[in-house]
Amino acid sequence: MLNSLIHGEALMEILIEGANPYADGPLTEGEQSRLQALGLRADQAQAMAIGRVVQGGRGVWVLDENRLVMLGQRDRMSVDSLPRSAVQRVEAERGRYGHTVRVHTAQARYAMYAVDPARAQALVDALQQAVAA
Image 1 (tube, rainbow, N blue to C red):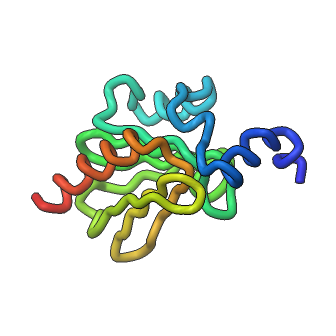
Image 2 (spheres, rainbow, N blue to C red):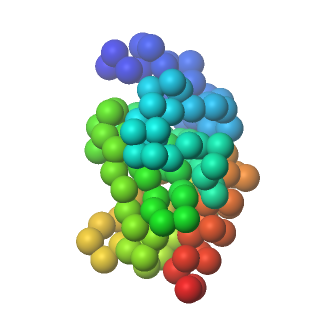
């Protein structure tokens, strides 16, 4: 509920208009520092997407040459990393709340909605190259 009060205007824009006002914006300082702790800089990433994690809050997915790093996937401060080789299927589609990106592995399926369309497509294109290889 507190999250709704703090981010209420942005959440209403996502729910009503299907557009995330933060989806094409920069990373927060906290997100940048969590990536730097992994030796990854957002400006050197092959692709990046910002959106909302299903039943969660803000999510950030950053792809480098070896892995997909997911910030906020389990909880607000979580950092998860998938090797590119673990990705079996990736897809993006226009949905009720903007663009949704889904990544499937043998163990799990991950999804993020309200993603900027251009960033969603760039992430899918880059991951599909890894799946095809």
